[in-house]
Image 1: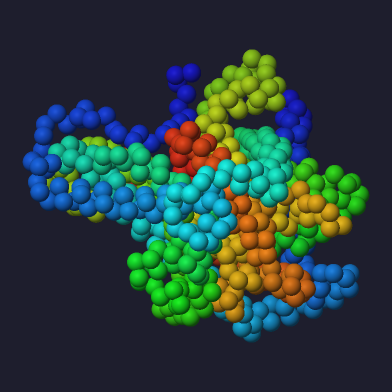
Image 2: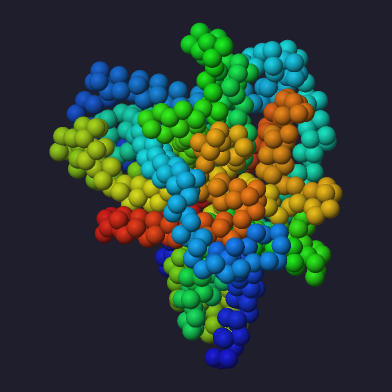
Length: 313
Length: 319
């Protein structure tokens, strides 16, 4: 009997673990190893250089730039997406008649939810290619075209979007335009998530509040929002990962994948540039390891901060 | 089975809770206040604006796909093409190779999603319900894959695939079978993580009853436990289909031919190339047609199954 269990366990685990070790763990382990060498990637010649690559990271101007851009997305993507998603969920759910207890939708809320969710099912690449056409820096682009037509933008001086490295609030404009796309594509999903969480709050809570004379705004800010805490913090963590992964947008949309003039460079794009354009694989691997450590620390910190006792109902 | 108390999983969020069941009394005079009217008006206005911001670009892309190239340049904004040029779609399908991209994507996904689901739930099941030395270690090994950036593994992964291809060609670069295995491997982390928490909630009593009745462990898994985990399987299945359909980095890295021959590109990868190549071919309507064809299937599937997709994806994150 015992013997049978052991064979069963091994039989079930063998294939998934083997596949995972070969295609995921082994490459990561190798990358960690290469990060200690000066390997160029194309020849077999490599020399052990110790931690030299890591020391170099700290004095690399491009890396420093990319790091701050990552931090920018890390803060703004969750912040704006969640704020907008909460606002939409609020409008969607708090409207309607006030004389009945509970969260209910405004008229047509089902349809709104379906529509707002659209960008979520689209591939990031499709979104990027589409927005590339919307953001074109001439009258052929959707936004410039409309603004030129109503006279808000001078045809000689269009909005540059992806070609605009000028800082706005201390951050290159191109990053703000990329942020807009991220928020556009993410808000609907989190709105649906928040709406579902709102609707799972039991009705008696709202009935009690209404009996106590609370209006819809009070009910929302004093009852609904605090009860959404868990959901919001989970959303924050996921959006944090998405923010680290803005690479698809940078890759498809920005000139020379990180431009103009490195204004939209993020960690991943510097890594790819270093590995495949400059042919410094060892150094690129060191960047990757640094990014991995950063990600893990961040995830741990977020879990620590957002972990609180759950409210059971 | 009425005693089963496992997590019901993704039950669609009820859009409209049954009205008036709990509150027979009317409270106050809420609905009739002018403030409430204004608020409702404002809600609708804002919701409508956002809906337009989401839908308008999609319609614009679709309509531009039906214009001639000259018209795209001359009248980029108009939503009504002078004549409907459906042939743009045909051109994108054949010359733009969208047809090949679709075929490759479907071939790969058919294998990779099946494999991901099978291997993922097998591993998750064993890890969740059997105690053996190394259990935690293997579980955390899968979990760690969730936090590591894929770019870090890019170079060694390519090298590994290249070397495997030398030994055994069907697993080399630019091969469907290779991409199936790579997709499955990279999807395992989240699938195991998700299904693990799902299998944990399944009741012990049924498993024990099955074993007492003489079912083998394997049989118990396939004919009892797996069917009970169906809600979870649907969620993670939708998640994997969308995730792998939209995957672009792995194919861009791995689906390239060594000798400069034709690449077996998948849809997302092909679309990037199509868009980058616009620079010198400037087949604008063809590009718009390509984007339309890439998004229509997912949008249609989503609209048909919107309840399942919404609850499946949101359950995936809140687990």
